[in-house]
Image (cartoon, rainbow, N blue to C red):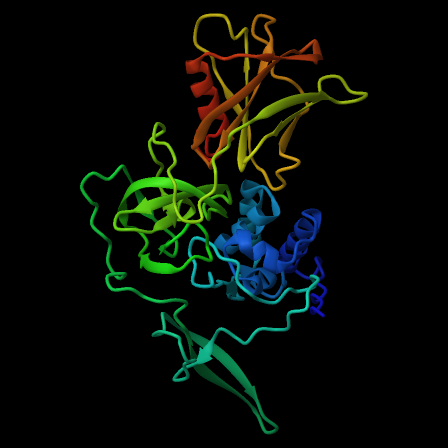
Length: 407
């Protein structure tokens, strides 16, 4: 039987209050186990459990991964983290849960403490070994921390300093300490960040690790495929693209700054997944209140859906301005993704409002699959399908799938 989480008092301090809200977010997401969260957050279950433990302030990176896996708003939670960090008294050093990626910078579902979730797994052995003690199979230590330890004896309290080593999480191939050269004929380039990028032999985090590319490297890629969904560390956004490395292997887009050209199609790779092939858009009006509509998108092999709006008749000439409403994660394919509009955008010259859903592979990655419906603000119940021309589809999809932090 899994261990229960230690109760946390939100009034005890800012760190405890943040932990309380994180637990609440997890409960609102259906109370997934920490092992389930780990599979999409990119951190081990133990690290995620400690992030909501209330004893230490998690790093911003860990918090955003936790929030992204629970479907929270990364911008809102980023502000909460900064507010909490500012409220912690300077006299008390902020002890942060740095967290291990289970050897997987692009994300990996590691084993760990479930912390109150259903399951039969018992506690794990510690991933930290004392200096001079190395578990069999572990590579050379990657990092040394100096940690103050208080030893209590019957006679006195003695403060000592212990040096602990974080063991290597995976195999290290030759050449991983330096950036690879960009090959001739690369289809596009990207820059690794965070903890670097693991190159795997397939588009899933459980696939074999081939090598690791350090952070801040410009890497040339030969193409990309669709694979397991990973949430990036910048804003917690979902992404299913895996970039192909020259010489073999793929890297999750979630740990690379950069995008393939819009006209570059996805290709096959080991453990790859199909791109979206169908998309349906529906508009439902709210009962009892005029002006409220829910826009829902469903379809086969949907991973991420972008929503956008515009005003005016699609058949009219002239430039059209699209406004992104939301970039939504599809967590349940049978449900799809939806967004609620409390009020429709103000019409231009009393023209109709066009609501658009676009299938995306991640931020700034439209697939070209777009559906649109036209409604009139005075009677949103009369939503009708509308066909956009090729240019309008490209512009609408670009806006709908835009990475939220971009203007």
